[in-house]
Image (tube, rainbow, N blue to C red; front, top):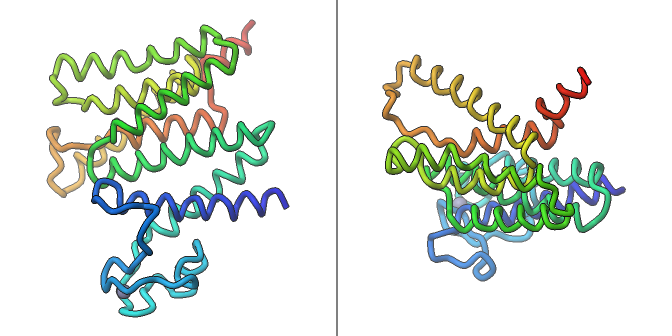
Length: 247
Ligand SMILES: [Zn+2]
């Protein structure tokens, strides 16, 4: 029952996240205005707006003009639903469930937004940093948690010496919040996973005959978030686990 409620709640939260993703910075309010088809503009009814199920029943097409519906809709809904289920099973109480759900919804927003627009909204990084500070404060201000913020220093340094050319300022800002939320050891693991996965994908892109060059802008936030997801959901923490094996 807990799992089912969490899945439904997560999927609904995911469908609001979709609305936010398509309306952010377009001047349209998320709360006001009914959702319409992106193609024909037809106002969508209740039956068109059921998370995941509507997409499956309509076979990914608009009921009115039968143009394709972006796969982002069900994908984001399934992701947030799965995250909610994981959190329901792994967080000790309701406040921490909502805390981490909010964190991951913001991170998912940054991930999709950075892939689409190659920019990380500063408001998201600021909100994550604030949540990170709250997390450190509620955890009794452990030095090893607070020190996670230092992980943003190398990224900000690269932005500083290249004047934002090699790496946008947004990545360092994002990492400040991630470091605080994960703490120093898990944060460092996430950081290394981000670089390794980023390097692998970067090399693959360079080898593809699609004209990617060293100058092509590849958003880095998705890799930072991928690393953070590995550290958080799979409990990968090299610098915490390894020493305990030896001492
Ligand atoms: Zn339509």
